[in-house]
Image 1 (cartoon, helix red, strand yellow):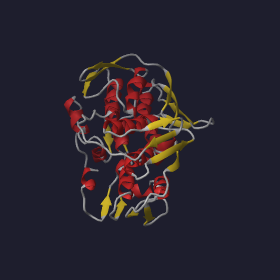
Image 2 (cartoon, helix red, strand yellow):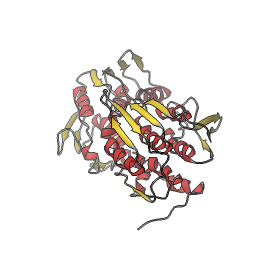
Image 3 (tube, helix red, strand yellow):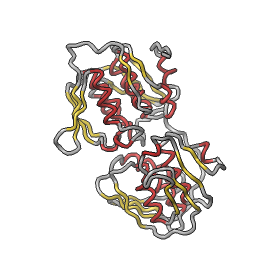
Image 4 (tube, helix red, strand yellow):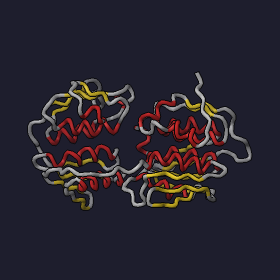
Length: 359
């Protein structure tokens, strides 16, 4: 994102960064120059049509360069705003909605966004609004309509909080360790991030959170034998939680996993494949959009020397890494963590986990 925002190149390659693709699509759509946005082969299989349709309604000039509805896309110079009232599905990626929100105040007419249907990942939309307001933009969210008038951003200083998504993997390590105490710095009890939900979820899975001024301390505690979790507002936590439940013998009923199909990989299929290696199952029930995690049989030992595939997905690698507390594992393509947590493997070594490269 940093590199591409300052780039003068005609073609902007986001590689595998979905957030960058979506935010830059909106950003570039209202600029005066002409650019092409593209990415990895997998990125060019991830849909962008809903966002492109909304931007086109507003007045953007966007053309698909290959397959309809998918990158690469050509974004031509923005000339005039056609309308200020648009409707967007609420059950899609919140990044589409955040992308539209962030450009709204610099549009000549502002923007009124009606969210239709069920609104997923609401905390991420709220976080976008609060950060916009922190930099001088007034927004209004009443019922299912978000209104942003035409106005200017103002500059200022802001200390970015540590990443709760990255913190979730340390909750997993504590949950699966025999004994553990970990302090994570820079996390806030009143965080705007949706993935702070991990603290509440893990209280049932064996981890207690004690918040301090400079962070949070994680300690091992007792866990429940069965839990029900709604991931609608925190889908990036699903892989981590599934692995913990699978190893600890916790039966888990889940909803809110719909968006996992269109992430870096089909995370539902990937989880089903990799959980099978630890004798656990992820099953879709007959009830609408419900899933059940059937954990391994605790009377049997964990399989030895498991090789896990990552599917070019950073969260698959980090969610599966804590299985090393139970048996030796091999992580295929460990460099995928560079997308969101490049120091992950170094941090594991700091707490005494032994790593070696397998050629």
